[in-house]
Image (cartoon, rainbow, N blue to C red):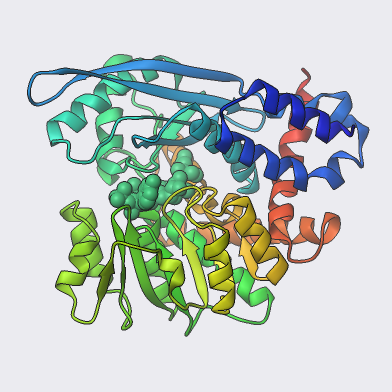
Length: 442
Ligand code: NDP
Ligand code: 2IT
């Protein structure tokens, strides 16, 4: 058995019942084979055994009181996966589906994504099975404070720096930051995605969506094309989706769909983002309300946005939201490029469909790295006790996304095949972390 197959079997045996984690591990292990097999140092240093096992997995009780006075208990997680190249870094997800498998897949992906940014950040992820939907302001605040009461002892500006993800935005980060400060009595950049009045970075809100569109533009440019004039299907209507739509529109594309967990909207005239923002960012409402507000727009609670004909598809909601049939439909409709805004939004079978069809495909680890990259810039600004302008941060983000594209393209060319950005991103991300692990000893 090859080294990779041996490790794969051992990881599967040790992590039974963790399908999302195994999906993420399988994708990485199968694509890094050319590098791992070319140098026995990886095997001799047990790099694969070590990189697939988190440094630390913290699971804790999060008690809080609801508005009726009932005591409720959720489960909190923080998986500190790998700190070979910097402090653990990665978001916190609040969603009822959260479990150890999901947090581990996210933490594992984060190692390679963060490496690709070129910035000194390791990989981690956390969250809770708490469902923020329908909760009052007070309930959200109390949950966030209780969550941080335990998390605070495990994190720190040079140890582990959490941020937002699904269900965690500026409001939640604010409550968590306040609680951390209360407990530790230190004012430090322990969380990113903070508000602009207390250490947040300009352009962090926009960074993931903007970065996604920048790298898709880099990819199209490399193939003699560009975003201008293209029609774009986007799923989701949260932080990533909204700012991907904004940048795509700024670059002259037409965004025709958005969605949430209750359905999707199609607007043949192009999504009016001010209306989406009012519904989602201000009222915290449902995407269905868009179709009530805009003439000519249609809401559907069946099917998915991928049935709409588009040139570019940007899945920006959640894992495994785009399956084999969706990929076939997109290919049939002659999609040119797919960029993953969400983490692992395409199933393995869907990726294989895009691969066979030679669809330009930018995988999540590269495509959505703009968010964590600007988080790392927020950490820098906090350490410097300085703040950069929006344009400065945006220019750095653009440069970082171009750097990621080049790294993925070069590694694809060298070790896999040209334009195989899945392999390229995994390989480029892996090499840096592996080298650091080897240098630092067991
Ligand atoms: P938000 O909470 O702001 O938005 C999430 C969006 O996805 C909502 O429209 C939500 O709909 C939808 N969604 C979430 N879960 C499901 C589900 N199970 N089924 C269907 N729709 C769902 O999160 P973000 O925009 O921050 O995150 C979106 C994706 O991007 C995630 O995969 C996240 O890991 C990834 N990501 C986020 C980064 C960031 O900086 N925020 C950085 C890099 C990646 P509803 O409101 O109905 O639940
Ligand atoms: O998946 C991700 O990269 C994020 N949710 C952002 C992490 C961060 O630390 O900004």
